Image (cartoon, rainbow, N blue to C red):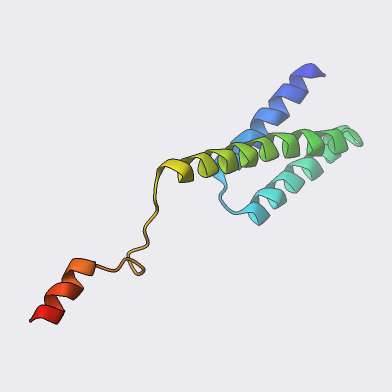
Length: 93
């Protein structure tokens, strides 16, 4: 049983890494759980929980990594950056 716990948490983690779209990831997890229900019946609920655990661990790691990165890096959007020196040159001409 512990082997299945580890296996499905790893699969959920992999889905979280590979799938950028949350809705698609949830559908994949539900599909795996429904397939597992055909084989093992009610154990599919546990499988669903294990897959979701792995998926949400990935989401949490990504969220924390992105929030930590934002402390050190300034993300400039090219459309919003104003070149002050270029404006001064235009005004002086």
